[in-house]
Length: 139
Image 1 (tube, rainbow, N blue to C red):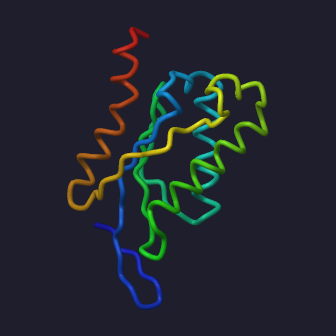
Image 2: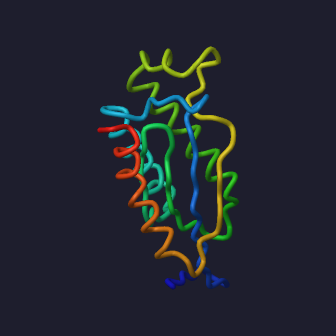
């Protein structure tokens, strides 16, 4: 376990988070996959959050993120999904048609679990997501 510390706190808060595009559309491929990967990395660096592991699959995203206890996971996800959609649409306005009538890229919810001691198991699971996705799609 890797502990961090701030002024009065020692912490190790690692979360496994999964989120999907609106209507779980299969839009995260090709150029969009690379764009999303870069945008998420840049946003996490900008807010000084550590990306432990991540995978962009064709219809969902898995990330393992270390979030300090001073930030709520819901606030981080709101920032991540909101800013990434805005950045994506600024770069590619034509992609607005891919998602739906209300022009939102991400679905409302997300899945989150704390990692804790099973970090290596979850990291391995996230690494294998892309391979499993390729096998399922016959690619």
